[in-house]
Length: 164
Image 1 (tube, one colour):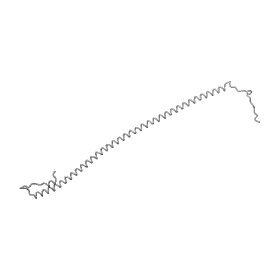
Image 2: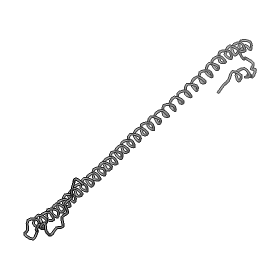
Image 3: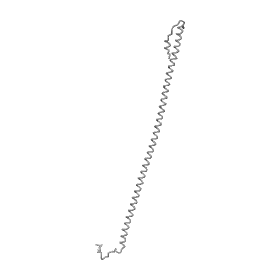
Image 4: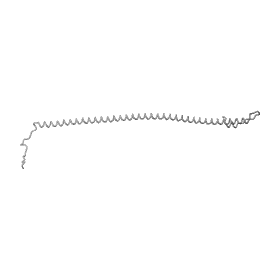
């Protein structure tokens, strides 16, 4: 690529029927001046383009990072929801098992109480039957002819004088 310095340093050979040296030098000075301005503008525009490309690359990079971050955040949220759902189901199952254990224990206690109640009723019935048998035997004995009252003569009765 040609630079303004290349134009400035360019030397031409002198020929016999050549161009006017002063006119050529003036024209070259003008070309150098315009070319230098264009060269600077071109360099500045290239820098702006590169800066814009760099910023666009940065924005694209940030966009990719944001997309990845959103994907990771969504996956994390999905994982958290799934874990929370599993934990909730586990808590419910544990509560159901615990409730069933409590119900089973209560049923066992109720059955034990009923069994104890039945045993007490049976014992009471046995005691009542025995007592009835004993009382009936005593009653039979009282009503039997074998039971006699002793006569007054056979019993040595002392008479007490209440006035003494």
